[in-house]
Image (cartoon, rainbow, N blue to C red; front, side, top):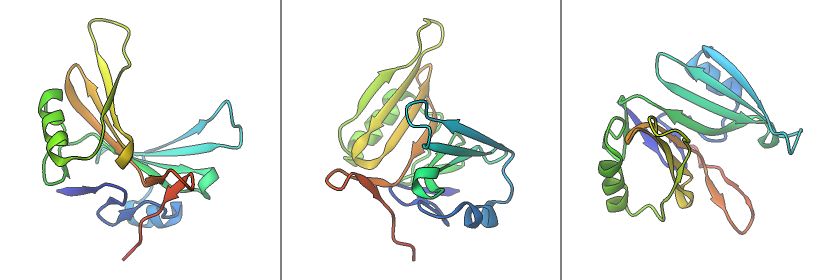
Length: 158
C-alpha cells in the first residue's frame, strides 16, 4: 500500500526532487509526454507514466525540471488511510469533508450525457479528484502553494 501525503509526495517520492533522482527510484517510465503551454512557450512540462503502477509524475521546466505533481488511479494507494479510488463521489465527498481539507469546487468537464466527468478541486491542499460517471478514478496532488509569495512550497526532505 502506497501512502499519499498532501504537499509532500508519495512514500520516498517527494515534490521538488529532480528527474534523475526520481528515475533512480522508479526506473524508466513507460511513456514520456511533453506538454506545451500555448500562452507561455517557455513553460514546458513532462509527464512520466508508469502504467503497471497506475502512476504519473509531472516535471516543470519553470521549476528547474523538479517534480511538481503526482497522479494515481489504482486502489493500491491510500489517502489518509482510506482507499478512495473506486468509491462513489458521495462517499469520497463525505470522507473529504470529515478531513476538513478546505473548500471544494466541482467542475463538470463532459459535454455528453452518457459519460460524465467531473473534477473536484481543493486549492488549499493542491488536490484534484477526478470522477468518471460518479466514481473516483484518479487522485492528483502537488506541493502546497504560498499565496503571498506566489510560489510553490517545497517539502522538507528527511
